[in-house]
Length: 312
Image (cartoon, rainbow, N blue to C red; front, top):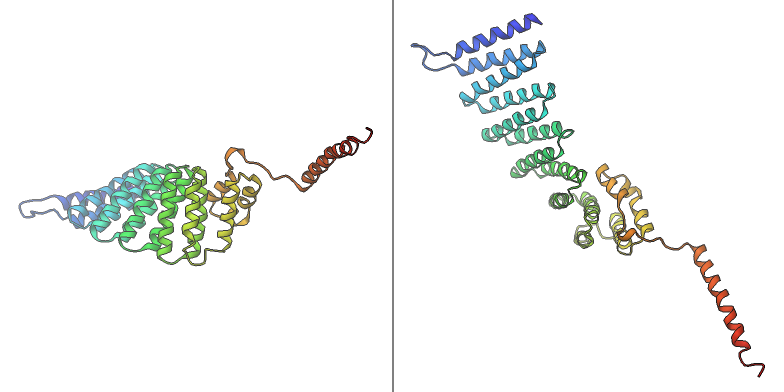
């Protein structure tokens, strides 16, 4: 380990020498300095000196930036971020990855920028859901600008699920609508059906029956939706919710169609309550029992009528 640390310091010394100017050398040799800083970073990393490795990657990034080599500067910033990740300093790690993504865009490699933002989102997701949503939305925006809708819609889907997890239902509703529109544009109609179910669940959790019904009504224009299993289930769910029929709502929400959705939406289905606490339909036995009681109650009246004036 000591040998690796010494090796790293030797590379740092060489890098600093390349950056010096003199009477015969007017301009620093940024390219060679960057190469030495990169070697120093790897040596520090192998010696488990992560803080020093991070600093070496940042010095490499600075040298590449001064040399206008933005792609390589961005890669070095990403590596610095990875060192911070290994040190469990995730918010700082994400900052450097975001900086790298901006450089990738400036360099004309937006795909690489979007993938970096996606990685940053995954890093921060266990710690900060709101930040993860922001990163996924940024990445989706980059792909959307490049007209790569399939990649964009996957990232919007991640953002939608995390918004639901945070119970930010207004934002989730808007995100799901954007998702659905994109799937419609790329003609992935079966996924549009699933997004309609997710929309209905989100709107009902918002307490907005009208918006939920509108989502289903608008989906009738999607090829194959009308009469589909998804359509029938949503019609039954809306009917049960509107009539405060707890039993019908529960039956739809516990069906395999909703139970095996993405976990965040399945939880919405399980926890959905009808307004006012709902009511249960009377069972057949209770109904017949009630009619028996009614008949028994009516019988004395009939007897009374029979003898009403007979003894006069």
